[in-house]
Length: 56
Image (cartoon, rainbow, N blue to C red; front, side, top):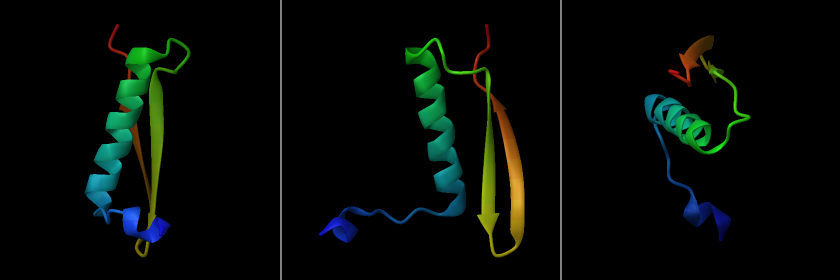
């Protein structure tokens, strides 16, 4: 069953995972941009985080 393969994450764990995934993609793909915008939607509303991907 697909639901058995789901690992629940806290909001901060999910955001950290997204950051790690994009940082890894940036190292492997030259066409990935320099920044990423992460939009968190929860009961309290929405918030945006921006991270720089490339340091060079």
